[in-house]
Amino acid sequence: MTAATGAAGLLDLAVVIVSHNTRAHLLSCLASLRDGGLDGLRARVMVVDNASDDGTPAAVAAAFPTVELLANPENVGYAAANNMALRRAGFPVPDRAGAAGSARHVLLLNPDTVVPAGALAGLVAELEADHGLGAVGPKLVLPDGSLDLACRRSFPTPLVSLYRFAGLSRLFPRSRRFGRYNLTFLDPDRPADVDSVVGACMLVRGEAVRQVGLLDERFWMYGEDLDWALRLRDAGWRVGYRPAVVVRHEKRAASRTSPRARFEFQRAMWLFYEKHYARTTPRLVHGLVLTALALRGGPRLVGEMLRDRSRSAAERVP
Image (cartoon, rainbow, N blue to C red; front, side, top):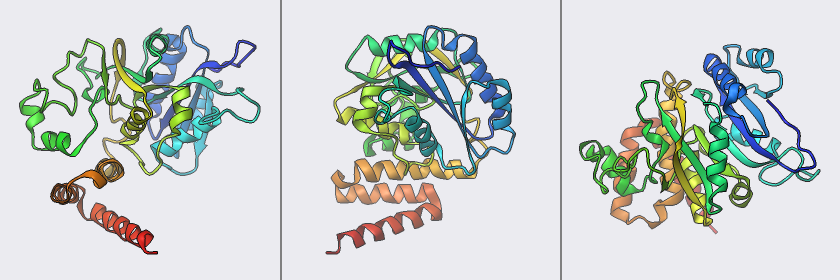
């Protein structure tokens, strides 16, 4: 599942899959790409394994010898692992040999997805039909056929997050005010421009990656896709949800039993808030947000918040 660039220029797509103890899911995902998911595209597939102890690297090498495998000796996190492959693919800038080894677009794909025949060509077509789109995502469905709500989202501003954690988004899912977190008031079968799609299957225009840079590695797991989408928006790009393409998503295959993953979800919320909203949030609201984050994240997150505050104060000392 690799292809070389030729006289015609760049590859269509660089597919990046990060794995950690998801061998069975990953092999199924790679099989779906081999068996039609990449039909119509010149693509390279890269798997970055984050120190799995379930035999993932050996299994991938044996079953899919043309997949480019990067095996990390330690779990460096989701964002950093994706960036390893993106750099290898020539992003954020082409390598010294020129365009060789890079592609026109990048796809972040979770190992617990199954991609139908022709799906990625359809997603690339959606992106290329609208030159204002910096990124696009498909309709993700769970194994029971229901919508994966995370596949189209608003940015978690303090107000949007309040509606979510106060339960108002669940009580009033059709409300344009209270349902903004997962855009539950939108028809899931109609295309829409959204704040963000999810990194489980996120196609990003190569030009946009070169403009805004790689994923922010401060996000160890979760939040990096939202941050990327916000940076795209700030650079003038739009993000599209395109449900004509449907991809199955097992969801949380690597994280459902991980205490660190649960902590990193809360930490990502704090990082996103600190990076994008803290400086413009009124003092009283800021205090309430930090209190809510501390209660949800527990002592470990409180300690990290205090250390960050101390570092920031030290940096302001002349």
